[in-house]
Length: 283
Image (cartoon, rainbow, N blue to C red; front, side, top):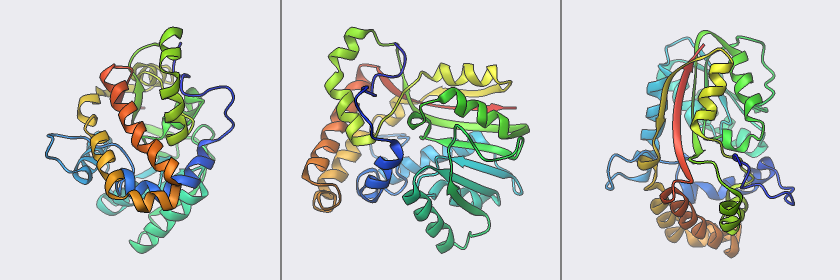
């Protein structure tokens, strides 16, 4: 069994609908950057750790002024705006979530980046761009929400210019799961689906092997599960400190499910069922 264990056949909710609903509460739970952190030590703050994960991606991307980049699954636009501002790169961010695109556009406007960081509704598995349109393809913690990952990676390779790079980080499956394990963890997987949306995980090797198949040369392939593990304790702390706000936005049940989901993720990390990976590949 591959990475389809979090998606029960009965569910009809889509990642787009889910994130349109929860993105307002996420800042109070996940922090400003809305993604995992890369922790050098237990003393590292969540904000510094999430910035550090972005820095890991930036180091792999090696941006240069004048480049064009696409941010696949741009969230609320923080990474795209940082890339545009710090490196002089023209960034196009895409997301299937109208709420995310609206927030990202507002962030770019407030930062004076209207022309260099632009955002639109889009599907990473079927991008509306010409072949070889970008020098860099940035996929930060969004691929697990795209069911057809082969189509995603093929599209990333298609829109990449010769000599360009794709950089990607995300939650990954650490081992193939027998049916007995899927059944054993069924309730935990369903809870994660309810909290984080319908997701499908694949091993890091799936991403690298697929990109090689599409003609790219893998330069970086790292398992950073250990460095991301402290994220869950910080999310629990945020949930406790911001309980009243989150309950207002999500409901008491939504708050409790998020808190419990942090425990589940820790359990799956410790069992080496789920983890986190980062990679880069050049065309």
